[in-house]
Image (cartoon, rainbow, N blue to C red; front, side, top):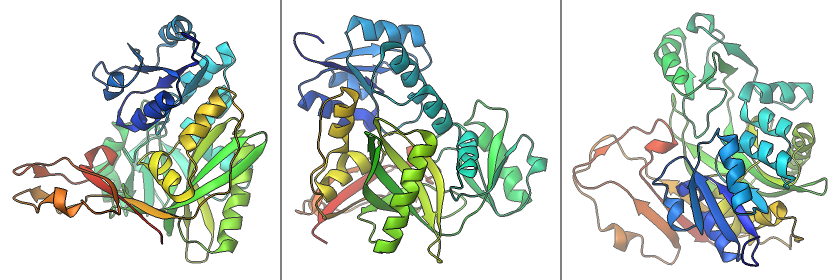
Length: 372
């Protein structure tokens, strides 16, 4: 606590954490941000900013003690979860356990938990050499990365040889994860976990790029699933929460549903979802701020989940044909409609339009809200 206000530490100061930083400020908290990037945008919005490497435990402890931190939060990234769990353990903050953080940030360990608890998922194995890949088609991915970085679909051995070295660029591990490819539509589950209760707040329908890449380029809420499927998702989410010991946290969980209505878990994470899912879409569609709930949980503040609204909204990322941008219409006029919540287009005339191979390649978006 500083100057009579509770102080909170936000891990990460990039665009992905900016909304959370602003929410902390709006709640009257003394907001401290740490990031290894000295030019992180969050430094301009925080009360205090410190340059700290993501693996520097001692420096993080110094920040906690310097600013008398009362709670810790992050959003849209898995990278700091293990460090945060270590800090929470030392200073008795409300946060997930170290074991939960480790299981949630290693996709192979995550799959082992799925299998041990009969949670439906794709079959997978660790691979060290490209020659060991088989049973095509498969998805190959790093065990320890996020944001679709290093995730590739391989139809055959030739694809595997082309993509294997690219996967290795995104991992610090000696092995990568190879999974059987699952057919089906992608969704995510946004949930809250407190007092041994798991509450599914919203289900998001996803849209992704064409294979071999699998980058998210659109999200719509609500997903419009049948009640029977929603109940199955809620039950499985409770099993996931118990299996990973999700407690005092929110979660963002990715699934696929095939034509038979079978549900398969792809990945789970005890943190807020990115791509404006938790920060913007959930609040528009339900009226509930998951960021505010997370902050209250971290500070051990009491909170209630009121009856949720049922509005519709979506975020859509530009996915233009690769080439050179020669011209565009008056974008400001195009997006000056009541239904448009926000938009951004980062390319200028003459810029190269990139192929979107991971989330960092995306160059703009627009967010829409409607009654239906």
